[in-house]
Image (cartoon, rainbow, N blue to C red; front, top):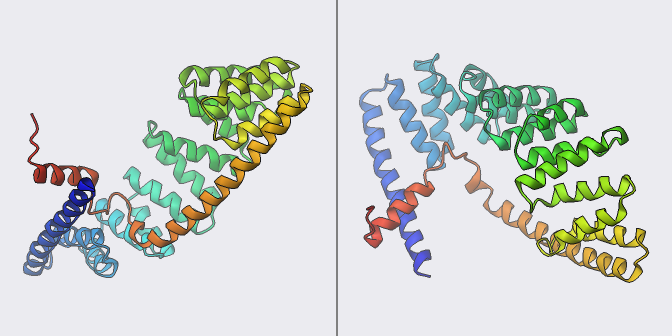
Length: 310
């Protein structure tokens, strides 16, 4: 309860600070209406407070005053996109394409406009600019898979040394009999990186089963049971493996456990969907535009508690 109170106070303090900054920015922009930089800063503050109309007006003015400033075009394009005006955001984000963040937003815009090829193209450009962004790499891989460009997705996953990329490579490889050996190798490498990775262990068990090593496949699945006792997919696979092994009672128990967990997950997804709808408006702005940041909250809490860095 104490931390909740402190968090609430920190949020209030942060909002007051933003409102104070807004007042100063309004005064400065009013005194120098031809300053693109001041219009930009004012627009960012409006956006951080969720005042989209005023943000659009001031950021639009900033782009008129400084049409070659990529940061201004990015901010304006992002607010347009968040306001549901993807088509209008497109030319502004294209002007900001020298910034990697704009490429990511361009991919989102093209997806919203129903152009999967351009979505993939912009994601590819972003990943090229930010190769260490694992989330973006995996997102690109999933988009390539959805577009049935499986060879490109596989090449992307093969280029990664992280467990998730290796597991996804193993899954694609496991679909073809001629690549079972490579699939097994990729799955084992993924488990070396992260022994708890369930997807990799399931793929490994699948390959072992398909190559006639049923006992080894079952052993891999049983090894995961202790750590993943709430994973429906694991118990689905266990039910099938026990059935193949002629262990009917264990197959039935695993199938029952699968059904229970599947029903629980469905109920949880429905609950999360309701929560997401409730809070959608408050979550529309990206981290770039959010006024309340974790670092600011922690700093405000520490100030209230009298905590000082050593």
